[in-house]
Image 1 (cartoon, helix red, strand yellow):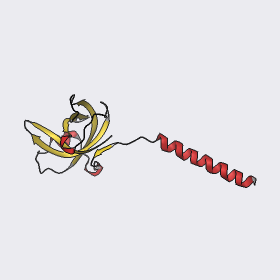
Image 2 (image 1 turned 90 degrees about the vertical axis):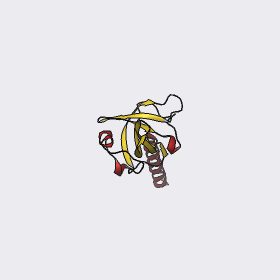
Image 3 (image 1 turned 60 degrees about the vertical axis):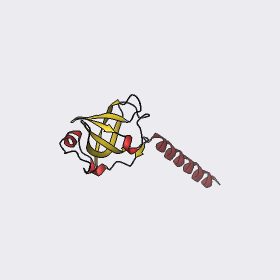
Length: 126
């Protein structure tokens, strides 16, 4: 009988450790399509590309420094190489719940939109 108690106690302890570690893992929020890390480039490299509707999908990572104050349908993203305006309207999500200063990874297409050149987002992870 004591052997079964030791196995039960050891198993319960192990499950507790697993639950604790799972609870401490950082949560990940994804909106739209999952950003493709294989296409990760700096914002400086993005700005060197020619914008077009046929541009390939790219992924950038940085901190949100400004958000649209009305509908959170766009934001400005900054990394150590520069900053860029990111439009999320076409991806059918907003960044209302994403705090300023959040580190985000965004995939999208580098396009011309009126006078602006923007990253038209397809997905975001923070």
